[in-house]
Length: 300
Image (cartoon, rainbow, N blue to C red; front, side):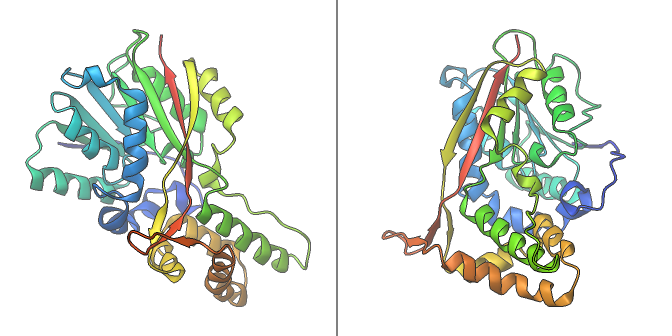
């Protein structure tokens, strides 16, 4: 089932607009959020850290906010077969793809909504057992508002929990994005050292992440660091993987001259290669170390 609500947020950054994420939805579905996909690995970590194994047969309501093409929802649905899932995202294309997957698999316990995670208007107070946001809430213009909504909809029983996944700043790809943009922006600003602000790292400070969750009412808050490698055949494969991603596009848009825009890809690859990433002996793919903080909190 698909229902729609409207978000009034406006910004020039692609990373916080539905249109920005519509453009990458097909890549997500094909490479990122498949059953063995990159973000699915972190989604499974979040599930295992949040929902007790003894709840496997229980009838629960699980909410996936900024769900993308459903990496967490689809993975959790394989485990908690008696539960009801609600998957929301403000990107119509993401939800469209998830609906197609659900229909193709004949799944009848997943409900989808096109909805802004900062305003979950169709979700009742105190109605959800577990809420998740896997690398979605980190892009919200108002992080606290998003967390407040996650708290609002959870049941007040000292058992209902939330889990939010964020990227860590020492993850390979974010280190390279940072170094590339810092160098190009410094050149753009006539040699004045300039540091780029990556929205995707909005919850990369462990203590701030914990404080945010506690400030909206969560208790027993834990921030747990997990790791999974991003696997690629060659470093050059990163460019087509990221090309339509809104944070890549926002980086390019920050550069004012065509000369600097054209430098981005080659500099990115040069800096990435300088880190000497290691190949796996098992599949011969480059293993790009990637880390995530998973913030977990309970509603009393």
